[in-house]
Length: 165
Ligand SMILES: [Zn+2]
Image 1: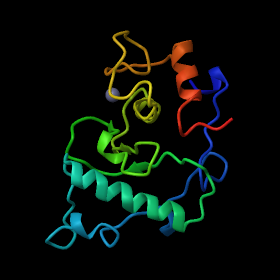
Image 2: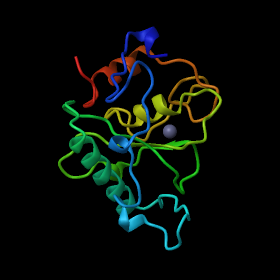
Image 3: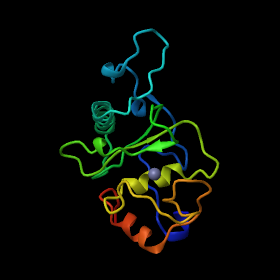
């Protein structure tokens, strides 16, 4: 979908199209003690609460800067489990003080149209925010399948704080 509109996805730590999970880009409960489980091996999905989103954002930012990312305004994409229903969420609370972008939380459960990531990146575009498209098939519609972007949406994405060039 991005290719069609000449939008390139520049991914930190990518090797070709693959981003390997490695210590430098992986958060554990050691980085998120506030969210840690009481019992060993128990998984605690990220609660749908402002404080939790702030904790996750701060931990992700630290990973990104410790890892030496040189992007001016990276858009953090965090693959994780969360309480909020759906495949992804880009909470306003992840735009913590001093940051120009929100962060996208993406569930490991892949959806069929594989548009979740781009959809959530849309919510991180300031001119889009929490709004959705009423048009079926559009990438900012809530329901699958989604397969296209409008020109004005492409332009908005190109002007987002996380966009370059
Ligand atoms: Zn949405």
